[in-house]
Length: 221
Image 1 (cartoon, rainbow, N blue to C red):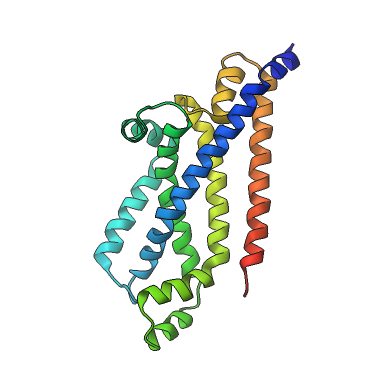
Image 2 (cartoon, rainbow, N blue to C red; image 1 turned 90 degrees about the horizontal axis):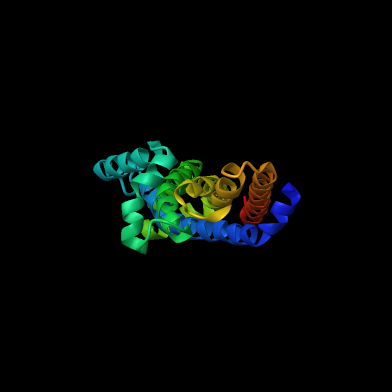
């Protein structure tokens, strides 16, 4: 009976899978666009560096830490009005992508900052000594040197977003998590529940393998 129920929801399963990919895709794109420059600025405005600005670093650092300290399920519910303002609805994968993006930006920014801290300070000092502009230092020194760490950071962020997207099902966000709740939890169908778990595990493994491979390819050190 449970196998029959699983077969009957295969169209829903297929839809949920692509909804998860859709949510994660939007969120990681926003995280890279906003989180990468935020992480770079958090690093470059630190004491003794070429864009030193204590006030900026403290304010942005506080905002980043504040968002990261909020459990995602609470952030998800708290940002429903923002999701409604941006997307015109509070349900579905597009609305859930708003909360996922807000959670991903500070998470990725801190990973970028940490990756930049692993760069030999002598390389940065040499660039400053020859008169390189801040933009040139960022473009030609920081990003190339930290590229493997940034790629690994994207991988970690994507994997975290897969887990977060499953939680979005609690508020009707769609995706595999929503399917697990509606068909697995509410209907006490363990077959559906286990299937969704396996799908999430496979997704994480694929993202991790792809991220590791890309990180090795871009590592020229």
